Amino acid sequence: MYKNILLPTDGLGKCKFGTCHGVLLAKNLGAKVTAVCVTEKLSGQEILKIYNPDLLFLKSAGTAAKESMKRAEDLHKDFAEKALEVAEKMCAENGVKCEKVYLAGESPTDGILKVAKEKNCDLIFISTHGNPGLMGTLFGNVVTKILSRSKTPVLVHHCGGPS
Image (tube, one colour):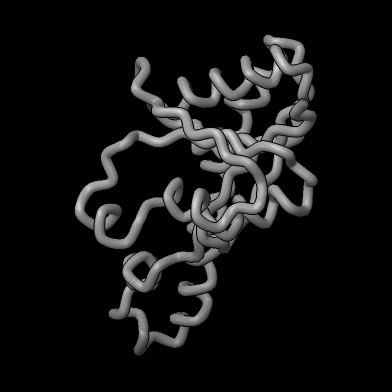
């Protein structure tokens, strides 16, 4: 039925439990996994933390800002690689083919939907903590946005398992 399951992951805490369930589903269906980790563009606050405003008046400010931005981008990339390694390891342990995709500078919703389309995924298996907090309640969380915008079937998993 499903041959290519998109498995968004951040590799952290309870979501490892969700990743495991997605991999087991793929194994039982004989499907491959397309594991994706999306890191957003840096927010204005993140940029201000990285780019110390006190440096504005120094001659080396441009160089320092570029180096700081590069370090931040590298941290995002390292985070994504670790998250994708978790999914890849779980797939390998269960004999499931895994393709890893890292997408930088996108909103999680847009990135997940973009990869689902580009990689011809026929199911999105996404985990949720189920506690979106005030901002999620007001503006919707990633899962809610995926459900409302996806042309691909979506299976939502509540990752209430062990951390």
